[in-house]
Length: 395
Image (cartoon, rainbow, N blue to C red; front, side, top):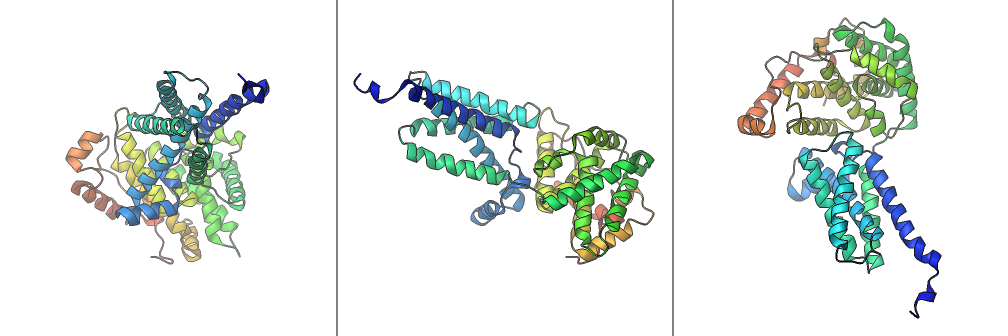
């Protein structure tokens, strides 16, 4: 009892309040910040995994992404353990573990805008429970606890960092406004796809005389990526979309097709936009990850047709921004009479709707012999698509 006067009632009350606020702030952060993904995996971390374990680029990015996601959920468990530390009872440990798991899954639900699939739930639950146990174990050692918390926050923030420059954002918004102004004159369907590309790149050409055509093409691609692909691209680049434009984007997107399909137009432009935000390898890795997610129960199934559209978008964006010579070449080529097949070749005969068990048993998964054969066929078809290649500075 003699020790009680050393702490005022306000000091006693302030500790749990700060802990609760910290827990709430981190829960909000992982619920609304872009979830760490292959496109945002730091190159130094990817390089470490490639060199230490001889991983391919895709596997190294996947491992790095899982690590960063785990850090985010682990910190949630640590902060929950700190917040509930004053409730000393035999139920403290199971209560913290259960609450951490539930909060982690709920944060994913908010972030993804759909209830997470089983592998996502497993990762969040395991990571949050490990974080809870670390927090409970280190509660009596504040300095030891501060080290993993500070390191984890730093790594998580770094892992979610994907941003475009203010200049590119301004140029992208200007291109988007121009496209929206002219969109009513653009037909629907595949013809509309081609017309919108021509429209955006004619604007890019007009604004690149005497300046860098690569920059103008980047703005055109990112603009079409947001309009025809998904405005989520802007969020991933830590940039905002003008609120009055979202409905206009959706209206244009819903009447534009590629190869007769709305989804293939979106695959093309999301992948092309990701090249501008990150690079071609990360864009491809994200596309593969999306198809693998689709192969799980409840998804639409792994689609080689979607992968064809993804790779076509990546090739187009890479060609149009490789260097100044290639950028000019693409601008000039888009003046010609083109059809949708110049952007996306024939996709007949490519398998779709493959769920994980069938994909693994019949195709050998991502590394299987049959998968490699189909990917080679996709490459052959893409080589015949005139609009997505440039000779300037070819590597």
